[in-house]
Image (cartoon, rainbow, N blue to C red; front, side, top):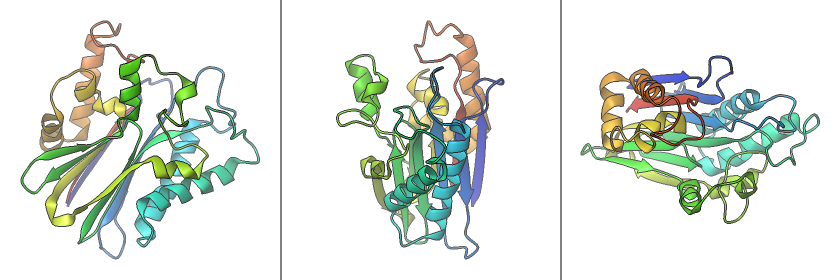
Length: 256
């Protein structure tokens, strides 16, 4: 098995709000990975005294523990429980009713000898390479569909008809894109925050298959570096429109 991970903050003066980790249980039966992309809050704040990095770390580690250790729980149930536990950890000190309370996108994957389970919530990306070499992107495209209709506002976050992120409501797990694939049909997989998936989705340097080939050949660090080069070449965001010139970028590659 080959596992590689790379992450870099978009701004060296700010903490990285992404989270990524992989667990290989001591039993040796499979593994699990979790990748979160924390939502950068506006200047007016989130109502939380801890901040987004604390939230993504807390939620990410709890979700990974459940996904790796509670094999009888479906990934959706793991996410719901992780959100509930994280909310409980700061309910007494923070205003969790604030619309911009700390939140994150989610990719979670769990595999064993029989199946590969996946969960994707919001605009982070999961790539699955089949035994035949075909690369399939698993996407939650609700945000993209809203963007296609016009400017997206915070009022469209975590509401019916909008898009969803993991915040303080455990019920959001039911909104995630989930599925299972036979283990023998998956050769490798990768998870990307939207800062890393810019290589495909913003800068159009290649399709998902080319992105996966880059990860397999040169590793996640190379993908992040290519994104940084593309961002630097368009520092004013004139050629490629995006919310911010540089974004936290994280990629994980797992060859099963």
